[in-house]
Length: 426
Image (cartoon, rainbow, N blue to C red; front, top):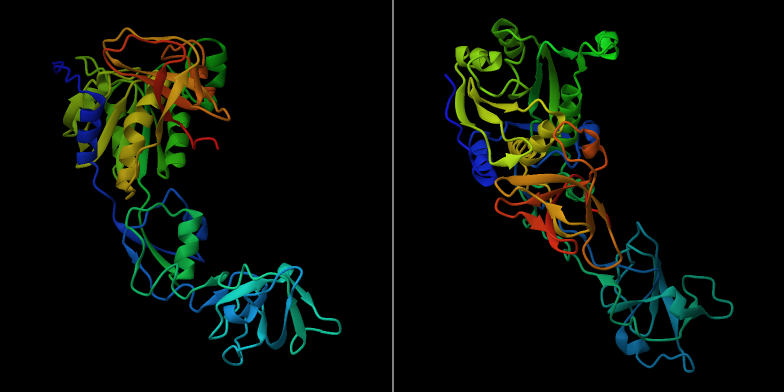
């Protein structure tokens, strides 16, 4: 018996999916030994608190001379101030004592400034005195604008005990650097989701059967490879479950191969009709359907539920529908499972480069290419014919232009919301 379509909105469908996709367990990675596994696709599983002050001491932000403001306040190009150099502090060394009034200390970037210094005058605002050769020589100050600047104070970045990064933060290069700065070699992150990828249909061929495709008797299984690439880009690990034939036994065998996965994606065979073998195999395996059909195009005949407590996504077989539903529903769910506090891709408002029309009865996701300009929002232009079987429309796309339900036209020059398919251009 065919169930009644739920026809959920995008937001409601995603809400229900996230409610059935709990965060995965934590694992500890080593900042040195496991560096290849740490990246922006991994999320911190705990709040990280500072263990040391940073910087650990007052230090110089410039190569130059540490001074007291009163000693150089009158310095100018035509009336320089001359001071003897009482100490030399290269990076990695410490001053021999406090700054003596009426003297200057030569200092390198990052080196601790002596007690009593109010600023570091950069070296390009000074001149060595004739015959001076560094420490214990003399220096001529040509201006005093730095006399109370260029000192980085202890703990101005972080104080011991302060929060460094919050749970759910992506492990970007800056985060990795901050962890190393805080002596955190062991990093708690959520485990990568292991997701089974299943294709369905007697008509599908793989690379060992390309002669059948070239002869026009079969079609190539592109969905498994496209979805596996999406999974890897999302930070999940794809597990190939192969191609199931049009029989319940073949589908059951494929599902059993994914028994140790954290979730399964099946493409094609999700119409849940009376003769649908995927539906029959799922029912026999105890599938708990959460919904079938969403108010979007492409991708409306999507089904979602749980199989043995793990999420199962049944995606349409048309390649564009499979990729669009992945971007809209699976990517945020998988990143949610991986512990990301911000699982969604960025959205922005672009300017339609052409009139975009929609039937209006569903939310439509059109494949679009963005052109960034020196000023104003980017221009969004459709990538050509938008049929759900035209995979090349996704090849050229770097965004999905969204026409909400009830909106039948966005005129050229009008604002259109777009879901980015990658990082926004500068």
